[in-house]
Length: 220
Length: 293
Ligand code: SF4
Image (cartoon, rainbow over all chains, first blue to last red; front, side, top):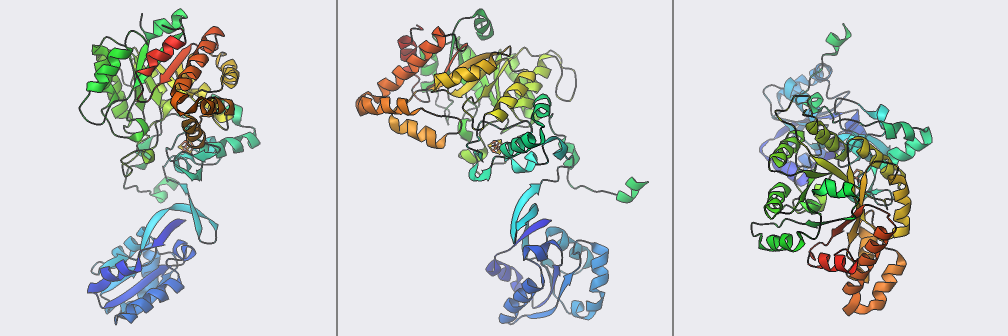
C-alpha cells in the first residue's frame, strides 16, 4: 500500500488560512490503514478548522480515493456542499489528491499528507518500504527480497564491504539486505545458483516518468 | 615493467595510495607521490573517499603518471551513472591510465554532502563487466568503440566480512566479471587471512593484502567497533598497549612490517596494499623494516 504521513498540523492550517469553506476527502484503503485519512482523522481536522472559526461543509471517506470515476460518482450526493466549498482537502496520498484535482477542475485541492513509499504494514501503524516500482521485477532472482529497495545502494549481486554483523553501513537500524537475502537463499538451497548468476545493470528505461499503462490494450 | 607485468613476474608487489585533497592546493600530494615513486609498484588514487568531495581520481592519476609513477584509478559507482563511468574510463584510457579498481563505493550518507543523490546505477560487479566490455571494444549498450581500452582491472574484497559466505560468493562473481587483481580490506590476523587465501588461490587472480598502520590501541579498538570488515585481534591491541603512548606508532609499524615479512616468506599472497591514510611518509619506513627496500 501507499504509506502516508500527516503533514504538520500547524503548517497545514497556515497553508489553508486563505479559505473559509472546506470539504474533506479521505480514503478507506491505504490512508485509513495509515491513520492519515480515515473517518477519525477527517473528524480531527474538521475540529481543528472549526476551532479557528472556519466552516467544514462536508467530510467523506472515499472507497478508493485514487479511482477517479468511482470517487466522482460517490461525491455526487455532496453536490450542494461541494458547490459552497472554497477548498477541497484530500487526506490520502498524492494520487488521491490528484484524482480530486481531476474531479474539481475549478477548485483548489490541497493535500493534508506527505506520500512516502510503497510498503507493507508490519505491525499496527508500522510500515516498511518493500518495493521501488522499478518496472522490472527481479524478486525471482533475489530470494524474494528486493535489494533495489532494501539495500540503500540497490546492489544486485551480493553485499558490499559495509555490512557489519548483519547490519548495513548506512545505519545499524537497517538490516543488510544482502545478508537477509543470503540467509533466505541458504534456507531454500539457492546459494550455489546465486553464485553462478550475475544480474546485469538494471534497465531504468522501464521506469521513466510519467508512466502509463493501458491494461485493456494489453489484454487484447 | 608495468604493474600487471610486475604482478605476473612473481615479485612480491607493494601498492600504496594517495588521497586527493579538497581544494586545488596539491603541493602535499606532489610531495607524497615523489616520496613513494620508485619504491611502490603502483599508487591507488582514491575516488572521493568516504563520500567526501575532493579532486577527482582521474585528474590525480594523470598527475601520478606525469611524475613517472603508475596509478591505479579507483572508481566508485556512487557519483556517476553508466554513461559517466564509461566516459571517464575512456578518458582514463587515452590519458594512459591502465589500472582501474572497481568499487561500489561508500554511501553518500558517510560523507560531507549528505543531501546528494546517490547514483548506484551500477555496482562493482557490473562495473567490472563494463570494463571488460570496453576492453573488448564494446560499450554497455553493445555499441562498437572506435578504439578499445586495455585496462588491467581489479576489485576489493573483505576477507573478515561477517557473514563471510555471501562476501565470498560476490568475490567469485567479481572474478567472473573480469577482476584480475584484488586489494583487500585491512588484514590484521594473518592466520585467518591464510584461510581466505586457500579459497582465493583456486582462482587465477592476484591478491594484495590490505594494511592499515595502527597508531594506538585506541585506534585498534575504534576500528573494531566502527569499521565493517576490520578485526584487530586482542593480542595486537595488547602489544600496542604495552608499548605505551610514545612507542605505539613505532609498534604499529613493526606489526605491519612483521605481517608483510610473513606474507612474503610464506608466500601467502601476491603483495600488499599499504593504506597510510595521511602517513604516507611511513610507507618507505615500513617497507624497509619488512626488508622490501
Ligand atoms: S551493507 Fe548491505 S544493505 Fe547496506 S549498502 Fe551494503 S549491501 Fe546494501
